[in-house]
Length: 136
Image 1 (tube, rainbow, N blue to C red):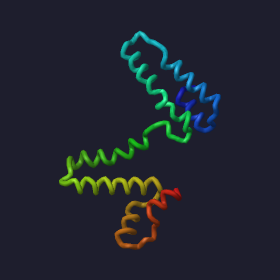
Image 2: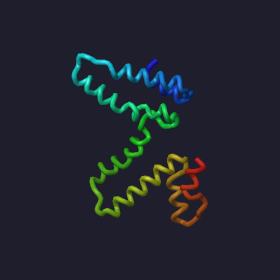
Image 3: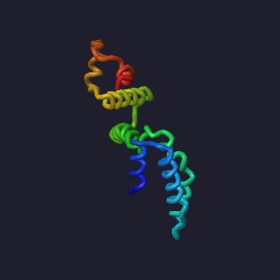
Image 4: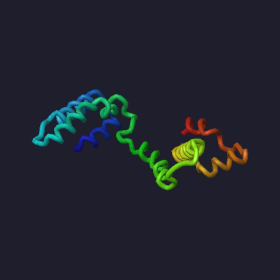
């Protein structure tokens, strides 16, 4: 079984025995030497980040990847590519606020358009986002 698969199983059923086994296996994988200088350097750098990379062993509820963060940044990057720049700092800040609101609405399963209409037309049919986040 691949190491990543073992980490996924650990997240489902964490225990001290598996935690030690996974930590020891990490050492076995990254303490080895190869005949490739560059690979040895990369393995050494990875070994130096062991605590950070295996944080899931201490906190099994954290994700094993950063895909969520990468996806959150994607919209901002696409917008920057299209526009190239903002005319003012206020425009950049407004863009960040709207992208943040849109992302939050998506994550908690409500329509961004409906949320904006609710706020712009003072309907207040939807609770504040902070309350919705706690309920999600």
